[in-house]
Length: 613
Image 1 (cartoon, rainbow, N blue to C red):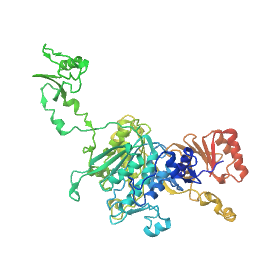
Image 2: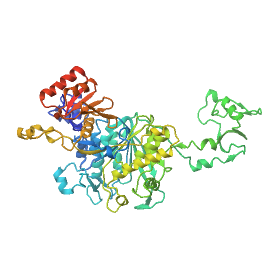
Image 3: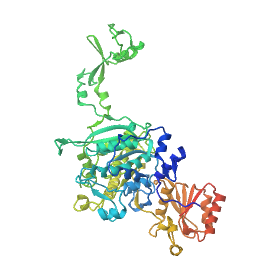
Image 4: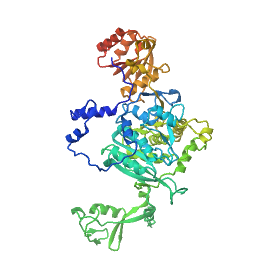
């Protein structure tokens, strides 16, 4: 029987292994001979000068993305909504650690990622990831932010590493985010002027310059209240990158420009309304079907233009018979009616000046909380809704991730769009439980941290969406729930990882590998992470001969964490032939009993992977 790792993957070690497979001899005693590798791939050695983007701490930031951690996600059903039926997740904790924990379960499974990271204006709190420091050095210099060891600091412009700190914060998170994206997936990143040029350089490194899709400018306010240097600031940016060139892109539309609307200025008073004229002459090279003299219903001959007509004679005749031709002077034109065009809009460009403003987004949130202004600058729901519509073509199994969840607008947008088109999209929100400062409206309303507000917003928004669409068929099946998971230290005692560091006397005094404050659900979800199973699938528990047995996703995993379980329970679990089975070390009183379990599964369910924790 195998022992679970309960440790996130060491991507750096995996990269070395891949290099060794491709180029035997390049990796010797765990070290990569970079000069030899360059020889193998036919590259000359770098000269003294080369184009590169770097900052103080970059190497440590890159290395951090690959470093394993020993942490877990603990389920919290009492703070969740519709725990047993929902496929949505709300995860509380430092998003760097959470992204590492999701690497096995959601590798290559996320269709879209949206993030709205700190903008680094000198007033925003950002995660303090000073990887070059030891933990003791960090605690001594900066202290911890709260009792849960959530690391935040205000990165003021007086800090000599103002930009470096921000770059080091975002880099490993984007590396891990890219791993989670599907090959046809997209990531959308909101940013302002302070770090947008650095963000693009970082994204070009991580995603590849060829996978840059667009940079959108969103007009977030027209009031012009924010003044920076000389001009009023009323916009911010949205960078869009793809995982690969296989990404999906669904065309979205904006309202027609005012100048276009004014072109519809004719009216024959025939009940069809206003229209504009489109010349029938072709502007490109002529073709055989569009080169002819046209004879109208009155017998008048209209000579073929030099480049022909826009359509063949049968289509022109149909337009004339329908009263859609304008025969004036020496020109034939098609009547295009506004009543048929106004709903179409125009293909969206990179200036999104038709979206709701920040003030509207603030009202969207406050309206759910009886007018209390809990957030200053949330994003509008329709802004996120447009991004999701761009990305999502199948609507059935798409996973939408936001690991700077904030006010949970992304979750709100997913539920709203699912209600509109019957989609089954699922969201994963990740947010550090930032403390609501004393004296703020949120603190006055009784909310301790941002996560409490975000979860409550999802609850209220979901119910409101259902109520607004109560007459729509199938609305009762709309998933407005979420499972709450919280980042915590590993479920396992230190001896589980380093028994060789302990004396026999110490080992004899330790009764269990597992920390005493952990329950069955904690252990189950720890195993899901270790085995790389999604965290939103259905699970049940039952009593077999008085022992609790957990079944995850109809047999993807069956677990029993009770102590001293009898052979009858082991045989019953094996008879169900699960893909995976897990027990705890104290489930058995001796090594022969463990060996017997292996033999039972080998006989009854030889394809089951069995582990003991």
